[in-house]
Amino acid sequence: MIDRFAEWANNAGLIVQRADEPISFSEGVLSRYKNIPEEWFKFMESFNSITNEAEDVYFLTIDYFADNCSYFEDISLDAADGDDEWTASIKAFWDKTLPIVMGVGGDYHYYAIDLETGEVVEGWEPEFEDTSVVAGSFYEFLEKLMSGEIVLGGKKLRFNSSKE
Image (cartoon, rainbow, N blue to C red; front, side):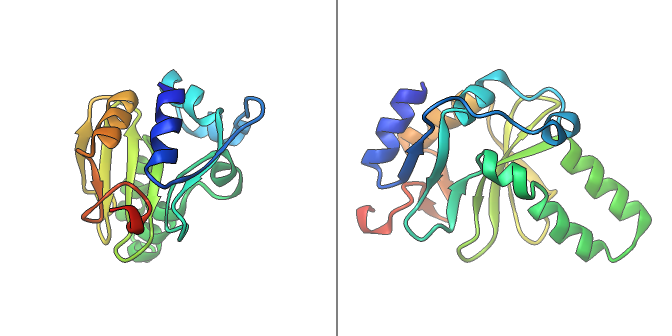
C-alpha cells in the first residue's frame, strides 16, 4: 500500500519525500495517543513529508508531532476562553483523535483517526470537534484518496491545482 500510494502521490503532483530509514515517534506522542493503528505507523515512518506545492495541504508527519501536535486543539481551546466544561470536552476529543492530514488554504480542514473506532473522520473550522466519518480505516482512507472519492476543501486531494 505504501509504495502504491507514493507512486500515486508523485503522479498526482504532490511533493513526496520518502524516509531513508524508518522514523520513530516521540514518547510524548505515544503516551498521549492510545490505540494508534499499526498501518498508520508503517505509513508515517516511511515519509519525511507529503505536501502540495503551496504547502497548505499536507500529511502530518513525524516532524509535525515532534513540534506541536495540537494545532486545531489550541484553536478550539482559545475559543473556549477558559470555560472549564468546554475546555475539558475539547481535550477529551483531541486525546482520542489523531490528526493525519491538514488543509490551511482557505477554510481550515483536517482528517484524523478516531482512536476509539479506527475510523478516519474529517473536521472543518470553526467547530473542529464536529466530525464526519469518511473511511472505516486508514488504508480505506488512502484508497479513497487515490480513487478521488475523498476531497479536501472542494478540490480533489491532488495537492497541485495545475493538474486538476
